[in-house]
Amino acid sequence: AMAEHLARYLIRDLRESLARGAARDAAISPDGGRWLGLWALGAGLSGLVLLACCGYHAGFGPLNSLATRAPEWVWEWLTVLGDERVAFALTLFFSRRHPRVFWTLITAAVVATAYTHSLKALVGALRPPAVLDPDSFHLVGPGHRRGSFPSGHTTTAAVFFGVGVYYLRENLPRAALVALAVAAGLSRVVVGVHGPLDVMAGMTGGVLSAWAGVALARRSMWGILRPSVHLTFVLVAVIMAANLLYRDAGYEKAAVFQQLLGTAALVYALRVYLIRPIRNWRRSRTPAR
Image (spheres, rainbow, N blue to C red):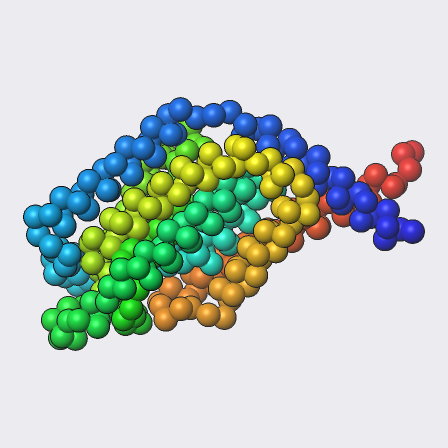
């Protein structure tokens, strides 16, 4: 009977928390939409101009040479910002308090996944390690050879930070998120696994996916207010965060960062979804003196 009472309390508490969070983030942000539109337009036009005037591999050499300008761990830390496991782990820090933002990221991720996988299969471009002499460029981390266009890491970073750009209200934090996404995309060229055009295509698609996620989340409240749906995707994020603890994806110098992030995300999720609600339930059962 006590376990049943606790389960009912946890579901009711989560439902009320999701409703409050959804109301908190319900306001439409015209400035956020404008930021996303200009960002996608700038990245898309830059890619088209680069392709038209200089070709598919243009700009790879000068940007890749930046690998010598900073320690390898800097580029590895930046490039793992585009790892989908890192993005999912970060969502655990606000999934309960801001369920609308969390659901927007989920819907945007679905759109972005369809975008990247369809284009990779359609274009079939080879990455720099597959077409260049190993001594002609700098390679940091694993030397992936296939699926060059578009950059999946850049798409992921653009989705995650793009949704943040939409929901934030201050321009300075918005600019910081755009800079982080650009840095994550640039790092893919610096570590030697993508060309600039791959990055620009990934960024354009990622920002447009974030925009689509905003529109879809606004029309599909079932993913925001239903505890069962919410917890399903929280479980996905938990699995992704746990994966960071033992798999560094070939970027060893960023392994500690990923492990700390994964641990912090799991502990925080445990606190807000179980420890704190159970503590409140116990207090609610304690008779007042």
